[in-house]
Length: 83
Figure 1 (cartoon, rainbow, N blue to C red):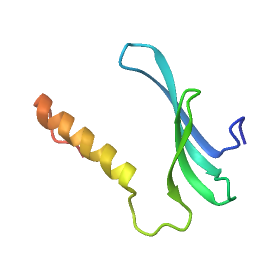
Figure 2: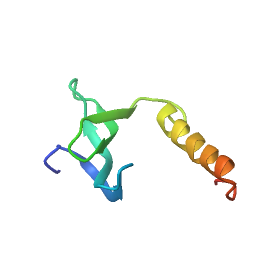
Figure 3: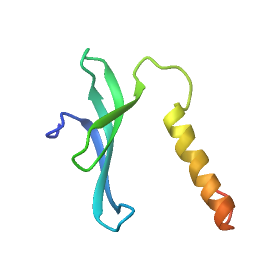
């Protein structure tokens, strides 16, 4: 576990829209009721839950929205189709 209390944490470093380095962390943690959840956080900002352990289905709306946004970026920028 880390200082956020996460399990199976994955962190990468990228930049924000003004070029400052930020860390983006995804992992498993517990919500206030003790349920296991998948969550995401950017640097020292708040943690956002995107999936509860009991959720059904393959994708959550957050994951779907992120994939759709990348596809739009490729379409508007004239790049190759997103996978």
